[in-house]
Length: 195
Ligand code: AMP
Picture 1 (cartoon, rainbow, N blue to C red):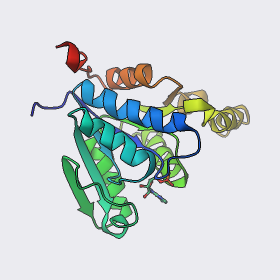
Picture 2: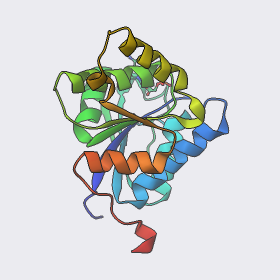
Picture 3: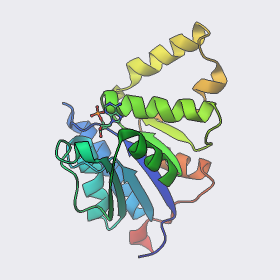
Picture 4: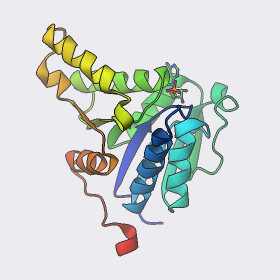
């Protein structure tokens, strides 16, 4: 197997959500990463959007790195089909390893776990702990309320435009993924089916 052109850490729901557009987006993201010779780094579960993204990447012949705390192996039904499945001791270790293995981060629709992971890498970025690009995929307007709140927070001067600008939001997965990879100073391989 060739060396991956880039690694994207995907944060997303351990549930599928109600709108089928969420599953479609997770599938499209996993597939795009694999088809452009990328590597998917994620939480290692089989459930919800997490499992859908991983499965789509694997089906398209891509590399998938799953990182899961031992306490969640059963709860999140660890995906044994991952190219690498790392069972770690703690949630902190999981998040540190996910961040280390990634060139960029992408949040898909998800719940508190997804939000916590997104805000953590965002705060780490503003503190200068890393300089990796971060994206929010606003599928079916799932994050529109959050984005409006963040604009309100800036308006109320609890954050500034520079902090807000560290995250890139879009409702289109393909252009967002391309933008993240390029912002990381890397290039997606041409669509593998075209090579
Ligand atoms: P959720 O978005 O709540 O479905 O969770 C998505 C993923 O985030 C799951 O793999 C959770 O294990 C993970 N996660 C990471 N940090 C946390 C946390 N502090 N609380 C809950 N879940 C978390």
